[in-house]
Length: 269
Image 1 (cartoon, rainbow, N blue to C red):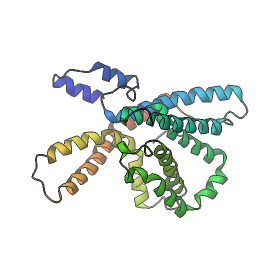
Image 2 (image 1 turned 45 degrees about the horizontal axis):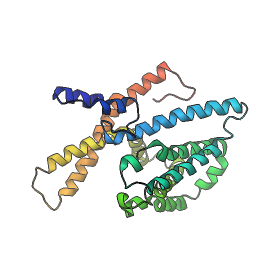
Image 3 (image 1 turned 90 degrees about the vertical axis):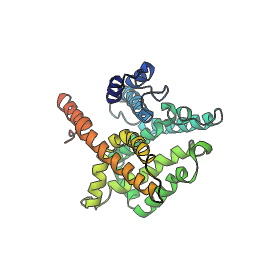
Image 4 (image 1 turned 45 degrees about the vertical axis):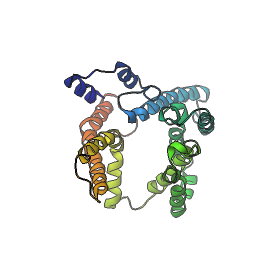
């Protein structure tokens, strides 16, 4: 965001302070911010703050077993978000700011990730028994993740209501398979893990690459392989720029944080 503000100052463009404040205060998923894709940051920040408050409350109520209520609370969050999505889908014509971005419609996916971590910590045997059925999990994961690829988001209320729920359950199937894979030493797995460790930065910058690539290719003669070359430039450019920015900005800041505020868990290397 600072980078974009700097570019606009250099170009003497007017700064839209409402959008800047939306980014700085993390409500860009309710009010348009500088970048369209940073709405996910707002959802994460809201979820982290609510999670911290909830865990603090549970610790006060149950000092011996502070996480005993966690599965039930997360189940309520999942049902509530799904209900709100369905209710919202009947009241408004589709719009990303209304049906996709708001925290109260999307934080169930983060909650499900926390539930998965809870089960791995406190119900490991159950998780291991489920994870043994890798082929079945992959099949279920593909099936649950298929709606967005089969239906147009804007015209399919199922996709942006039940589809969001199916998406995080399907993703969890792949996480279970990957986490319990015995082939973690393979080059392909290491490459995927490396990209995964830089995934948010890649996601954050991919639209910059997309816009730049479109502007470039729109000026070139169209050929039958135009889209193939564009796709290659888009994917490779997103990976390269995302990994570069991650190594220059994100990871150094995380290491600095770990030195200044040591955690009980192992700091990122």
